[in-house]
Image 1: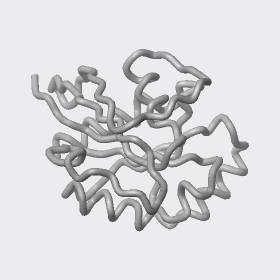
Image 2: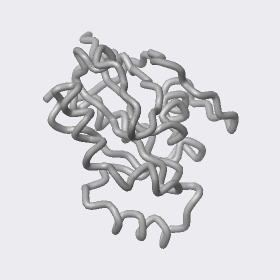
Image 3: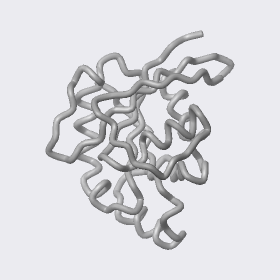
Image 4: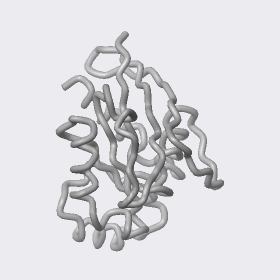
Length: 161
């Protein structure tokens, strides 16, 4: 078995911790508890006939002007950038935010996830997609357990590239 460090990054309150809790523990809580610094969870997954122990670093959310310690990003094999479909400020500046993460981590590709699908209609989700000039890899709902497993599977596949 190989161990791979993966990052979940994005603005505060977008649902990074909820996605991790849903994936690792199959739990969801409506309570919002802000992550301070970084929290690490683990889960073993199978990908391409390989067992991978994902060391999932839940990096505290920030505002655009806040800096995240570079040390959090060192040695990462893959990253998932999470934004909140229902909060425009979390995706308006996506290209710049992704570039900062790429510069800090050295990663070239990230899994881009729009979370909180359960808060919007299909039409509203299409409107969000039209505002974003990037390819969104997955639309998820940690609350309804929609596409969460798929998002982490994509993340695991990124670690093997």
